[in-house]
Length: 356
Image 1 (tube, helix red, strand yellow):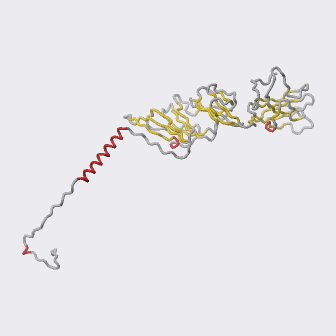
Image 2 (cartoon, helix red, strand yellow; image 1 turned 45 degrees about the horizontal axis):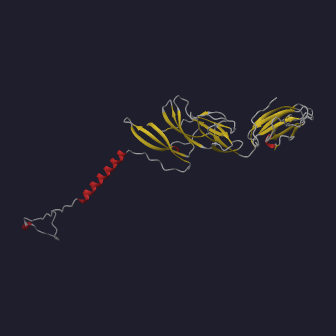
Image 3 (cartoon, one colour; image 1 turned 135 degrees about the vertical axis):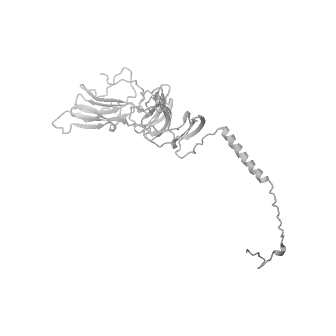
């Protein structure tokens, strides 16, 4: 019976086969890990000792050298006190396919079950994403995503606001409407601007993807009809340009907002804060500052009419002050006093006039 079928790749040192078999002659169970780097067409190869009655007990195909933990259950025997135990394939050295392997047990095996999924035991693997084929590769085609180890994952975000983390298995296929793909970092902070269909308002939220579960999609935005994601950024301080319509007169205004200043980091399912109380006509991502230090707060743009008006007011004030400075100061008219009754004036004391 066929246990596994796949396309053969010559000199493949990443694909590892984990294998346990029972030798037909002795009844002993052996465990082994091996590569298949080269084969001859239409030639059969034996992975066991080749004795009659040999039987396969366990087999897995691991594209990135994963090594799982298994649980082995033995058939009851008078000499056995312990009928079950665990085995970790990571403790088994990778050898050639013709190797005999290590002894697991000399007693009959009842059942072998997977206990823990495997992680890679090989060195980091450089992965690229090919946007044409929508697949991952190791042949330097497309966008470089990074070097991946056993437990690393891929983060993908779709245009409809749905996100998901997956393995970096080269057989994975990705959707056409994907707008972001990168190596998953659970501590990375993301900023999303989205439109809520029911409330008919724009909101901004900041969060991390640490709560995601492998291969389980989750929506970053509301599921209400009309909701949509406007932008997503992994920058520490993304700055956007917003065109507003203010008041009953619908006065246009353009402003720049540093989204990191508008909201703190919250949960991935949070709705976020309202972006503006005014009607929003358009939103544009201007810059993405990766530095976590504060950047200068953006200043709202003013219209040319307002600038000219302010300049005229300033010029008029300066002109008025200048005219006041140039105006000559008039001399105070001198008033001479004349005494009409000198004979009746009597000066007493020290030349001072008496009060009474």
